[in-house]
Length: 268
Image (cartoon, rainbow, N blue to C red; front, side):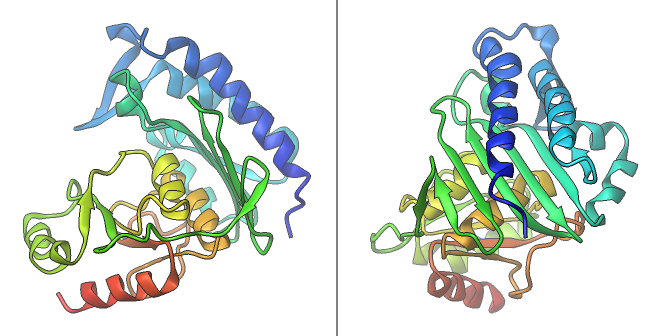
C-alpha cells in the first residue's frame, strides 16, 4: 500500500509546477509559446516547463518508480512502455491546455502512481482555485484534506457530460438517439481535472469518455472509485493505464447510475 505521507510531497511538487510554470503565463501567452501537436490538441511552454519540474520532483519522492509524462510520450512513444512497470508516475503537466491557451478555466495538473498497470495513487490540482483532490487505493478520496463520499446531483433526469468530439459519426448518432434522451446533457469542461471532481461532488451524474489516455484518466478513475462512485470500462472491467489504445470509459456518481448507463450502451 502507498503511504499517505507521499501526498504532501506530491502536492508540493504540483503547487510548484503551477506557481512557476503555469499561473505566471495565464492570459499572457505569446503566439510563439503555443503550438499544435495534432488537430485540436495544443501544447504550450507551460506544459513543457511544468513537466520538467514534475520530472525532477516526483522521482525524488519515489526513485524506484518510472516516469511517464504526456509531453515526453508525445516526443518519444517508447516512453509508454513504462506504463506497465512495477511502479510508474503518470503525469499530465497541464490538463485542459486548450482552455488555458484560450485564457479561460478550467485547467489543472494530474499526477497518478500506478502499480503493475493499475492506479494506486491519484492527485488532482486545480491551479486557479487551489482545490486539491487525492486518493490512495483502499484509503478513500479527499478534497482539501477532507474525506468525501460521491453524491449524485439529485436532478431528474440525471446530468450527463458526454463528449461527442472523439467518436465516429455512426457512434455519435447512436448516442444522440439512444442515450441522450434519458439525461440532461451538459457541456464537458475539456479537462479531466475538473470532470472527475464534478462526478464526485454532485454536479454531474454520469460521463462517457472515448479517449482514455493514462495521464488524463488514471488519477480521476481512482479518485471517483475511492469516493464510492464508479469508473470502469463499458464492459465493467477495470481501467488499466497500460491499455492506451483501448477506447471507452464510463464514470458515474453511483454504481447504480453506472449500471444504468452501461446497460443502455450495451444495447446500442
